[in-house]
Image 1 (cartoon, chains in turn red, yellow):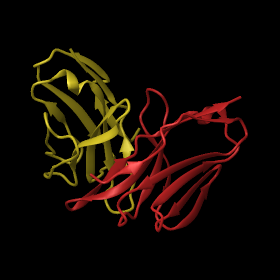
Image 2 (image 1 turned 60 degrees about the vertical axis):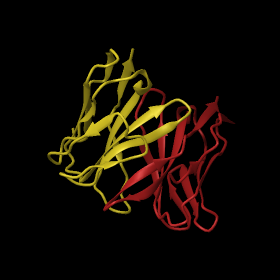
Image 3 (image 1 turned 45 degrees about the vertical axis):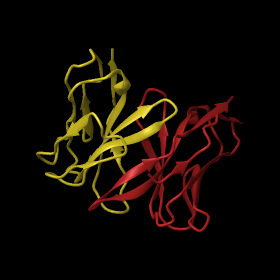
Image 4 (image 1 turned 30 degrees about the vertical axis):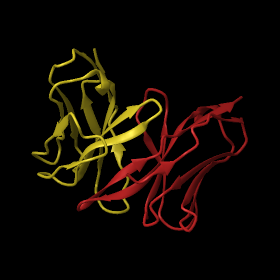
Length: 113
Length: 113
């Protein structure tokens, strides 16, 4: 089983600050990466996808990918208390003739007012 | 509203009983997945299906079976439930392909006593 590693946290940041969430993966051949947000008692919801090295921005969220270092990160600017959730890093892996997501264990983010 | 529907939302089950968790999607996605989520262990893939008529084993398939008779439905069966199968079960679907994300149902909370 290929590994996807995240710091479990909790990561605590004050409201308005930048939250930085990190993820490393073991399969050097991986090409597709995703960040999901999961509120307590709810299902995961997609925030960002990234496939190429560099940065990808969507509103207050920026995903960063460095395939050489096998590292993907998520930055949340102007963090809000509503951003408090668990953030799951996922790497797409081949499964026979298709693919499936391999998830990290998630990082818990707490944004304090 | 398009999406993924899981049933039941929660269930208490006696050990040794048979149980089928239902999952239906109306997005005409090719691929479907079953994950279980346990505290400290994250989301783990149980079984997957890349297309109707095919299934495959994930990371933790023992004690579970699936079928994919058509595009929309992907039931998960526990033939003889054990307490270690107490978990939150998520069904997900994806259009398929290398750069497509997965969308999740609302989850089924199963307690085996």
